[in-house]
Length: 141
Image 1 (cartoon, rainbow, N blue to C red):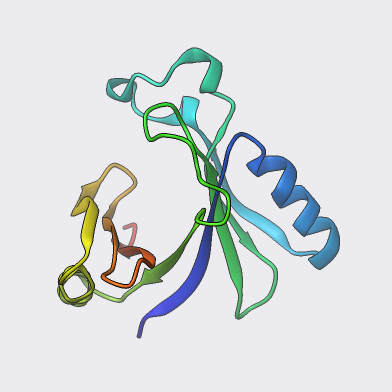
Image 2 (cartoon, one colour; image 1 turned 135 degrees about the horizontal axis):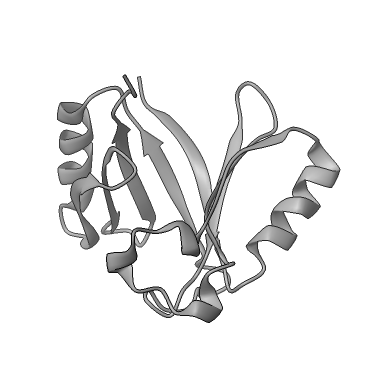
C-alpha cells in the first residue's frame, strides 16, 4: 500500500520552520540529516553543510511532514512551488510502475535509481505541474 505525505523545500530556514511546526503540533523529528552528512563525492559547499538535507517529522500515527533546504547544487526553491507529494511504496516494482505512469507527459527531475540512503528513489513533475517524489526504502537487515 502506498502512503502519500507532503515534502517541503526551504531556502535555508527549514530547521526554523520545522521547529515552529513542532511547537504547534508536538510530535518528534525521527530523522534529521544535514548536507555535511552526504558522502564526500557530492562536494557540498562548506557554507551549506549545516543546512537540512532531510528531515522527517511525525506528528501523529497517520501524518508526517518531510522537508529540506535547497542547495546551490539543486537551485533555490520557488516559494509557492516548494512542495512535492512524497509517495512511499512496498516494493521496487510498484515504485517503478507509479514513477513511469506519473512521468508520462511530464518532466523527470531525478531518474528513478538506487540512492545512498538505501532506497529506490526518483522525482518528477507530472503533466499537470505537480511535483512528485516516489520511493521504496529497502528494509535494513
